[in-house]
Image 1 (cartoon, one colour):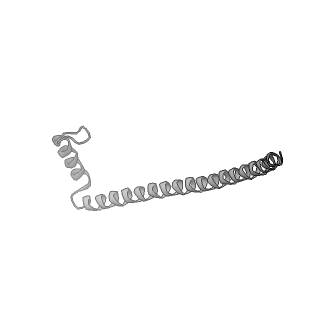
Image 2 (tube, one colour):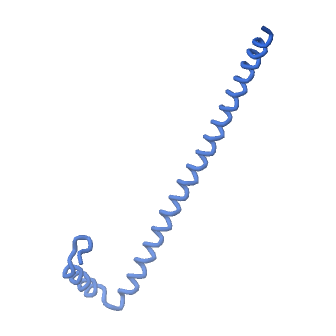
Length: 92
């Protein structure tokens, strides 16, 4: 098994050093603290992703509304111009 380019012997050696430095009774507390920290980091990144998604959705909605309004204005202007042209053609 090769995890992050570290062999099994190297992992065992690192765990041995951790046990020697902190003691066997402190390791569950350290692991619990690391787990909580990782969870908080994950929650923070999820919140950031949600905020970014929300802001892009708002921009897309505003952009779409502005485009639709412009298209409707152009259609109205074209209909006004084409209406007078159609009337002129019908008179001839």
